[in-house]
Image (cartoon, rainbow, N blue to C red; front, top):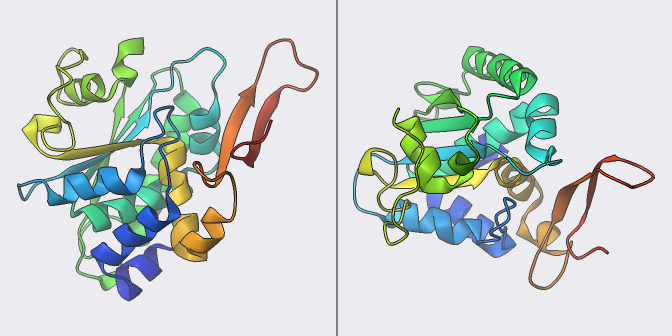
Length: 232
């Protein structure tokens, strides 16, 4: 999907495909990812940041953890594609301190990406530069909130900012910053590979695609399931 995006599509085309797919944020808010990307892309300023929010703090929620431990490459690929569409050259992955295996597997994936020319300068000879840093969270539940998370990445206490300050326009170090959660980024390569029509063929009218759920508590079968949006 990354090679297709870099060599067969313009950044605008990538953005348009994500908007057509009506990919909504998988972190709980459900805001359309394409509109969020577009806001950051169109915000004034040369320096822009993209962020993976892997700070899931809800009790019994292990969706982000499972993806980062089992398939970190999909998250990384989605992040690079998003950065290309937005015009960002620096990304951050904010991971919970309590997820050591996720951090370990993610670090391996980052090293492999560097070795294969999928990160750094002139990715795959395309002329696009992009780097990623992993930031380990301090364990505060509030840091899962977007502006608090960005404040923590800056090295300060992770406290939320006033809501009237839009992080898409003024986020990390007051630069335009786009934040999506792990599952949202991991869905992007599928949309680029299979097309928005395939994606919109799954789910409901208002919510397209699939969603990963964590089944815990007093149920017969615990674990993770991925089902079409709208399933009961």
